[in-house]
Length: 109
Image (cartoon, rainbow, N blue to C red):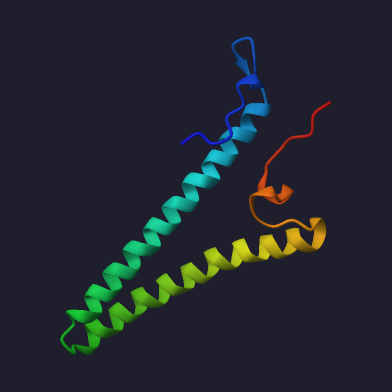
């Protein structure tokens, strides 16, 4: 899943710090996908546990805990993205992928 790979980051056969930009960008992309997948699984497991608890208070409490943590994770994930977009809009007047905060770049000479 290489999104922003810069073929000019190598000097001879030695990678430079410019390659770190691409690696960091790809790690963030993969981490976002992983977080979304884990949240979906938590919602599915919590919902299934709640539906199959048959009114057992202990199982209902466990299922509600799973759903509660899934909702908290979703709020943290989306909240951090929204906060970054708000900061970017206020500071740079841009939103989304064009925002400089979402582009990890090392300053060049």
